[in-house]
Amino acid sequence: MINTIQYVDELIPQPPKWAVQLEQYAKVKRIPIIDKVSLQLLLQIILIKQPKNILEIGTAIAYSTLRMHEIVPNAQITSLEKNEMMYEEALRNVELYSQNNHIKILLGDALETIERLPKEESFDFVFIDAAKSQYHRYFNAVDPLLIKGGVIVTDNVLFRNLVLASNEEIPKRYKSIVKNLRNYNEQVMSNKNYYSSLIPIGDGLLVSIKLN
Ligand code: SAH
Ligand code: MG
Image (cartoon, rainbow, N blue to C red):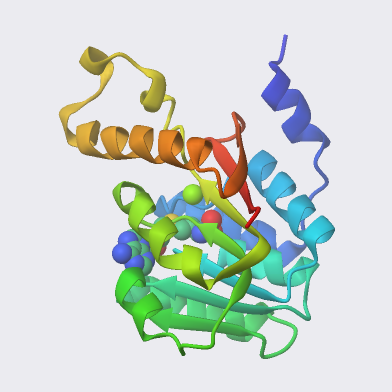
């Protein structure tokens, strides 16, 4: 018998050819793009929310960037990437597959780039998907830029389910990531300025809406 996730996964229609190609490329190169089921929900939230100004933290090859763009082509998307090779690939993919010039990719450490954004910049949707041990910093940095009613979606908050594993089960190299993610999940879930749901699909998706 197949499991629930496989069942749900198989019901999701095939994306356009360019997206399938990027998925295959990411698989071969072991680039951690968002999984199908999480992406389906991310895009659904975007369709409901109809954001005008999206911030993405962690571009990689611009797969999630382009999928968000595809569903709201009139939204402005600013995406932050610190790895120069990823940045170059992202630029190339955006050049090839975007429908207009609404996507801006910025090279550099996300926290530094956020500090350098124009003072009047504000966002109504943020997708956090860069360094897993820095999530709390990204959240605190974008909070002042997010308007009331704005949404923050954070990917990989269960980190291969290691976040709920006992400490002996966590490989040494992941210990600090897991510790930081646990703190992140607790802090965001108990933050009174946000209404949040941690959804255990994919690698764990945390959805937060700013109440005030
Ligand atoms: N959102 C993409 C996947 C991003 S993978 C998708 O789903 O298609 C995470 C990316 O974050 C990597 O490319 C990595 O280089 C980048 N990253 C890691 N630390 C970063 C930082 N401090 N600032 C900006 N980007 C960072
Ligand atoms: Mg991710």
